[in-house]
Image 1 (cartoon, rainbow, N blue to C red):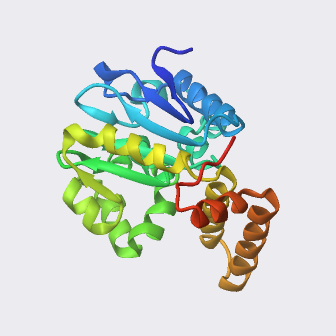
Image 2 (cartoon, rainbow, N blue to C red):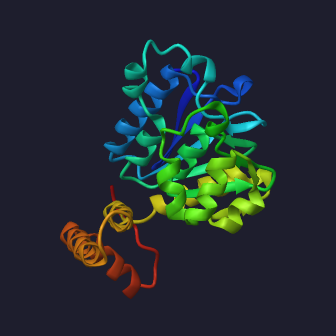
Image 3 (spheres, rainbow, N blue to C red):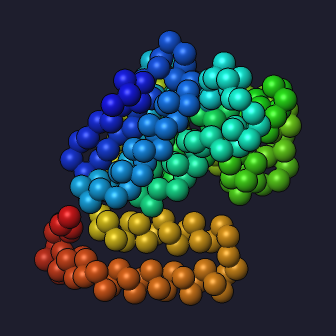
Length: 255
């Protein structure tokens, strides 16, 4: 395992941990390859029901791609075919929670946008500074931000490159939970454990249905949702939910 990207398991929850604190967890090509591999493996692991994404150190969740490494690509074509770590996170079928502290910049912010739920500390700051360096982010910011905050606010963030504080990120709807800095990892972990206690089929069906809404018409999305609902019933977990309701207890969904 790459020491700069670590995997921590706790029951049905897996944590992908960026561990390069001296460089604000900036992602190198080797780290990107590890993130992509872990996302692929965890997505197919029946013992994993939710994924937590976090960074070590006090300074940053992730400062994005290592700029020195970006200069090492032999050509624009080689860069075009790079491993895109934010996309690897976004492609996961299982719920992903991002625990955000310190600086959340560039590709790190795109990883955060690629998660399903974001928990941010009050002292954190988020920004998309690519335009200042001469390019546009390649991990989904220009596509995800308008869906979260609308065209105007997305253009403000992407064209100025100016960072915003946690309160503003929460007000805009970029992050769902705003907590004290020392509580970020704990709150994010608690959410993962909550999701991991539900039916895996139901949780993944919810995610698939909501993602479908981002790229389809209302009519097509509703048809898709119905098919996902049928899938849940065919899996049989709904019977445990009904029994738990009847017996006035918490449902226990087996792996």
